[in-house]
Image (cartoon, rainbow, N blue to C red):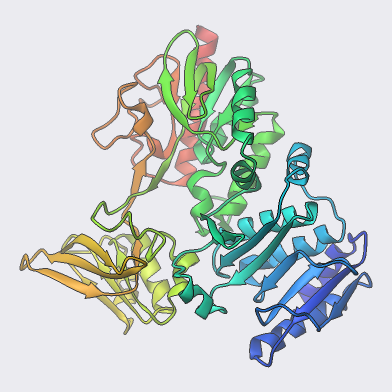
Length: 513
């Protein structure tokens, strides 16, 4: 099942096991079950601390569990954890075997102190780059707390269950049978929902913090670069973010980051966070800024009620996917409307879907989806697509792709549970038409995360923060960088450069004032 190179690498990892572990397989006669047996046999042969038995009684087959001999296992995999999930498998083996997790001691204690029973079902797709974070977070919690159990479920393998639960996007998590959350989740985010007193405790601690020299609002590439450049000056630096990594976490493949031939968004985000923390920056996540008040010390008000103060502030709040803003979109988000073709595409195998947009991202996504779904219809509001010619040629060569342009989407329709069609206006004939389908993927650009700054400083008509060449905003002591600004090209490397610029300008402001 595993090739020799992977076996050798996995064997070296398994040398870190500190105690025996057991693999328990629940198999059937399917081809996937034979693959699973091969995978588990290969793993068991790599360490004398791993045993395998095939008399599991799990309802989902094929599946397997990882646990300690003599104990009921708490980590389950309903499907082959390959692709992006292979790391989840390796970590589950190591952590069950006693290898210490890379997690702050306070979080470990918080997990151990959770009381109650938490039965987690995490539906994923093997092509989803956000799903492993969710699986790994809950698996770790299962290792640390006997009241937690987690089952990873490959939606493509258990299609009937996906259909019966009307699952249209991954990752999606059910807790004790009820929907718990959808989308990427970190351990901190999960604990914030499970531990009801955590938010109040965090707000109280934030309110006690001394003023910063530089406070960066935003944890994406621009914010990370700004924090690193500030911290290297030896000044008190903080980063405030809802999640560290920003939109990079939702980016699958990055091939234009100079000197790095190819990487993935989550890997880059993890490297950015590690680099920032190396300089002792105070990183505060799961926090949403709601108000900016200028003064001798700039105040940043948080949704939790806490107020942070700083001599200078760098705004690097980034941007988010732009929505269609049509009737039905809100009601059917994650019920057929998706924003990540790589993550959610496998859930629509053999089905009819639409792709909204005409740029490189949407055309590339339509090409990828064509290899999975039954048919893709791409809608664009202009006469011509904006994507590169080579991508358009590839798109036009595919037999299961149609392009409708110019067209304006006017409504998403559904049956109350999931999407069943889309209504659009043909901009040539002005006729209103409807297309029956089962999924809609939206790739129509970005919207800056600046609503909370309305009235506080100068914004462009499209909501972007107006800055000069050095990152100054209209407020003294407040600077901005990255995709939330009027910088014309929204690229990771440009965001990093603008973050460095804003940070150097903030330091210059501190020196001169």
